[in-house]
Length: 172
Image (cartoon, rainbow, N blue to C red; front, side, top):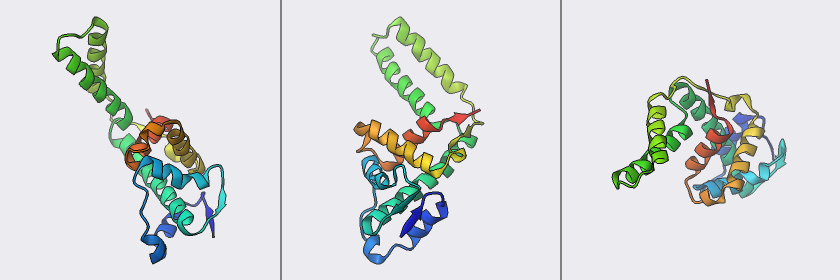
């Protein structure tokens, strides 16, 4: 069976029409498992797959498509999730240093800047993800996962969030 990456509908149909034997397999749950599921699609507009590989490819495409839609919504309604997460993490770490009284002048400056950035976050942003082809979105995830094996045990949603926030940042 041929899977056309250009057709997002094909991914959804594949997921809905999976045979009971295939449907009983475990879905990818981690970034590493989704990376492995997406690998057969790397650099291809068409792929000949069957069985578990077909199911995994459909799962990969459906996950990428769902993340594209969510990322678009988040960019329009909320500040970029990745930037917010980075800012909040920086604040958390530096506040702990500040609390124990060992904060340096530069760290204090960085903490103040992070707090200000958090307050000034622009809630009206757009994502560039939907302007890229499905192939480009899959390749962006594969590249991100390949370059960050330390994140393979994280949830697949976490990996998708990081890949999309890095590859397709929200634009003003």
